[in-house]
Length: 373
Image (cartoon, rainbow, N blue to C red; front, side, top):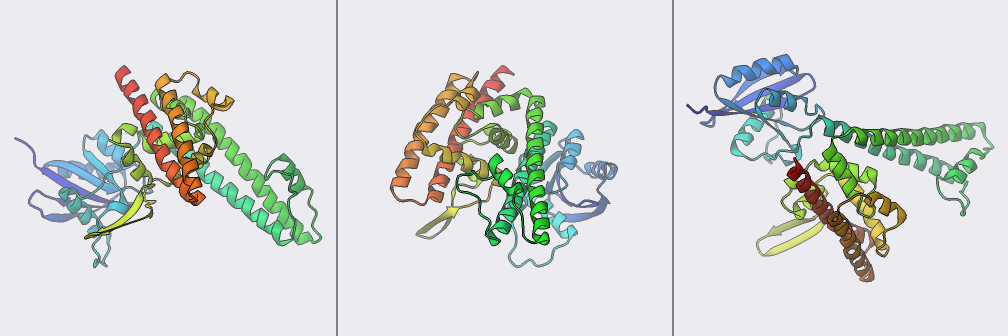
């Protein structure tokens, strides 16, 4: 006899989990609140399974995927859903853990929730490392801006012939002498923070190199293949791979573009159609990587020494896609610039098309890996 499916909504917090169940007849009931501990979760799931097969969901959040992995080991189907895509009633002004769990169970039963991709342990570890480096770069920029603005208010300007934040610039900063002891103390503190931020980024980049070397072979192959693209070095390729997971889960390049949030927003009603700026509803880290890479396509197509080195050992079809990207995106860059488009819009358009070539290379490499498996 086929078991009846029961839909379970979990409102997960650091210490507690609110549980609600939706049955086949549409009734939704709260089961209560349990501690967020593996033993408590296991007992609750076993108790609920007596009434039928379970389909569980909870919102993606700071608690991570530990609960998902535990339920997967128990053989329970589980979805981690995107919080921003959960339907919201305009007039609903009451929010409690119990109501949230009941809402999740109800929407899971009706099929109105959007599940996110869940990485495995290896991908999660590498992704956390790449994200830590991304955060360190943001902190480094913040410290540099703070020091720069402090010197500007005192009319201390970097010599024009010195590149910003290079060796000569740091030597010039260390040689600055303030007339007031308080200003000197501030300069010393800000400069030390800049130095520590640089060391932090360097250590994380070394850890990323080691992490990629330890990663599963299929991740290494994807990261190496994406570096065949101009403007996409090791850190950028690792960001794309760890954030996407599998490129084959997107049926078209446009779906990947929408996932990253570089497609135009739209508000259409009746006979009117209005498209605005990009949606920015997707993955911000991927959007940053392709946006930075897009700038390199303002130069004419060429394979420099660094790019040739990154392409060593890659399949000819991957190199062909990368070469096609250079011609296509350079022509597009020059055409849009000649039309007088703002440089920000030009880069956005190029980054959107660049994702199409990223998708093509990712799909090609994954097909080869799947065929060899």
